Structures are given as C-alpha cells and as structure tokens.
Amino acid sequence: MRNQNPEPENAVSLQPATHAPRFTHGPLIVVSGPSGVGKTTVVERLLHLGNLQMRRAVTATTRQQRDGEAEGISYHFWTREQFQSALDTGQMLESAVVHGRDCYGTPRSEVDPYLEAGIGVVLVIDVQGAARVRELCPECLTVFVVAPSFEVLEARLRGRGSESEERIQRRLETARQELARVNEFDHVIVNENLDRAVAELERLVRDRFPTR
Ligand code: ADP
Ligand code: 5GP
Image 1 (spheres, helix red, strand yellow):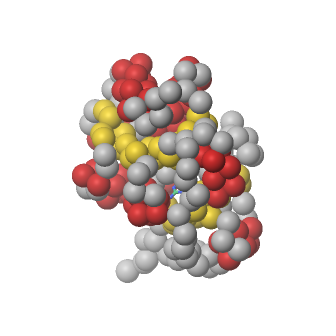
Image 2 (image 1 turned 90 degrees about the horizontal axis):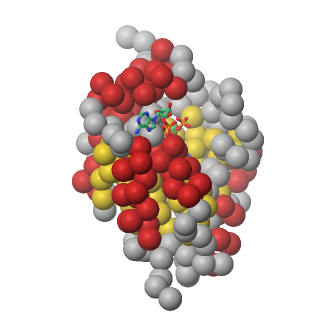
C-alpha cells in the first residue's frame, strides 16, 4: 500500500526546546484548535480592539505562502534549511510537524522580549506546540477553539478557498486527532458567533493581566 504521509525527503529533525521562555511580566496565551476553526480571525479581532497590550507572535513555517499572506505578518516563510538552522542554534521555543508534512515553530524572538516588557503574547499554534509550551511555561493560559460542528469546520476550511482538496482532507484528518485532545486545555471556546467568541477570549485574557 502507498504511504499516505511520506516523510519529506529533506525533513528537519525537530528537537525539544530545553529551557522555558524568560517569562516575567506579560501573560502568555496559547490559542489552539483545528485548522479552519477561526483561531486567527478571533485573535486578530481581539487584537484589533486594542483594549489589551498584547500581540500575536509571528511564527515560522516551511509551508508555501498562500495568496494574501505576507512574509513577517502572516508567518515567517522559511526554507527547511533556515528552519533547521534556527532549531540547531536554540532559537525556537517550540516546533512541530503539522498535517504530517510542514514544519511550524515559534521563534523565541517573537515571545521573550515582549513578555519581559509586560506585553502579552498570543501563540496561535497546533496542539503539539500547545502541549510543549504548557510544559515549559505552566502558568500560560491555554484556550482551545472549536467550531459548532465538524460540518461547519469543513465548510469554513472550504470557504477560505486557500487549500487544495488533498490539503483540506489532510486538515480534516488532523482536526479529528486534535479534537480528541480538547481536555488538555484550560478553556474551550465555541466559535459560532464571532463577536461572542472574541468577547469570551477577551475576558479570559484580561484575567491574566496583572491588576494595577
Ligand atoms: P484558523 O486560523 O483556525 O485556521 P481562520 O481564522 O483562517 O481559521 O478562519 C477560517 C475561515 O472561517 C475564514 O474564512 C474565516 O473568515 C471564517 N470564520 C472564522 N470565524 C467565523 C465565524 N464565527 N463564523 C463564520 N465564519 C468564520
Ligand atoms: P496553517 O497552515 O493552516 O496556517 O496552519 C496549520 C496549523 O499550524 C494551525 O493549527 C496553526 O495554528 C499551526 N501553527 C502555526 N504556527 C505554528 C507554530 O509556530 N507552532 C506550532 N506548533 N503550530 C503552529
């Protein structure tokens, strides 16, 4: 039988990060959940409100840039060599192979300086990355976003219009595995009504900022 998830020829060897972020003041928030559920939309809306001093970490990936995505804004789009080099030199907080093929990871430079300055940082990452960050930084807040149903999730993935059918199927398969890990998270947000989901995330995040 053909291997459905072949190891990429020039796969990078992911290594666990060995030390926690130098977490001092700002809260670290991890938002996870299946691809297409609306994580980025909810987080960007929250940040756009501007009520809290926080930012989204721009993470790195070896996947192809989609139409409408910009380097350094959507992601840092790295080659496998760049990704491997960042891992080898200890620059990554966490990293994972997502959807069985592409590498994703959070550069420490996107997190540490901001937390130290008292600025909150949101990581929009997959469940493997969330588990790793939870280990390194148990005081972080972890939130799992779900769609009202699997059918709605599929419709959102298709509606985004950014993926081939093969990639959609891969994302749906990953989603099934990720949904089984919902209990690992501090909170679950059902992203049905966008405004309500944003308000719920805002309330959870606000509680993590020190009161003055
Ligand atoms: P993710 O970051 O989880 O992969 P996106 O933020 O890219 O997901 O959202 C996937 C699609 O779903 C986008 O087209 C987005 O506009 C849409 N979407 C997000 N939240 C909602 C919502 N509450 N209701 C309807 N569509 C939504
Ligand atoms: P997409 O390719 O749809 O942008 O993202 C695929 C998945 O990778 C999403 O669940 C997204 O949250 C996750 N992801 C994005 N950046 C990172 C990262 O730096 N680390 C990990 N572990 N997952 C990431």
